[in-house]
Image (cartoon, rainbow, N blue to C red; front, side, top):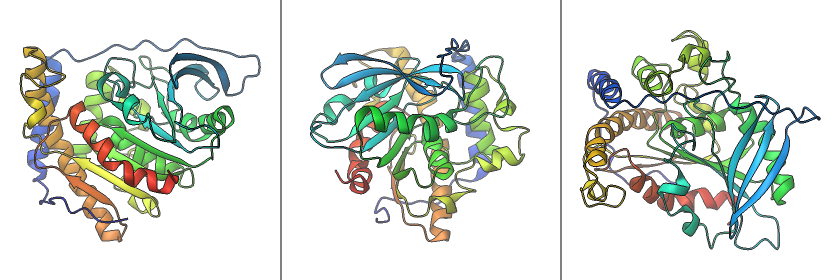
Length: 349
């Protein structure tokens, strides 16, 4: 594992971060980004235990599966890409979507070349298509809007044995995610230190215990999800927020292969009006220029803070600080490609 050769600049001042988050919140509200999410329908298999409910083919080496979570007492949909060669057991990459949890169009499957990228790779790729605004965490209380969230339990305890049995895996795992999940994958790795071999975090804010970090969480959970973030981790600034802060708990990342990336928010080649994903859509272009710029600048500071903390602890990690780039999918597709050798090495593929 190696330390990044990418540019490592000094973090912005915290005042700039706070101001950035205020801009994000204002822009989100002005753009009407709040999304009401009804609690998912409850499923109650007769066994009352977590189990595979059904499997549906959706294309060559592409499956939709449904798994019942006993912890959340509901069915969870997931997308699975199977290995190029299934003649022997293969490892698994858990690849998480961002704030929408895969319940909207902002998904790895819809926004990137993930299917083509993994077409020649011998790895199972598992992506939940639920969990919007949940931080993929175990919430302390049920929420009137988002219902019961026990995602840490589901992803680290309930789901892996089902995936291993269903797909005959090696039992060796890695995890990666973007934006909201760029923080979550680090917390999940800290919660289950023996489950994953490597972790990739793209454009996530790896802080929750600080005031700027809490503001970022509130933007996602309350500003967009319409939920109460204190139902997630208790009173703001309390022990629940500290326990779920990847930077505060950085020591628990020791021994993992780690890849973390962020841009600066400065528009780059994917941010032109004619760029893929924008394709002349002026509303999308404006959103990316406002929201994508400010959010990426904010998470860039979080990422520098994490890099500094890992450096203090002597924990090796690869950080890729890009001099450009907004908070958007084309850059995350590039980062998935770029990080794959680091994620794949411990998987043995």
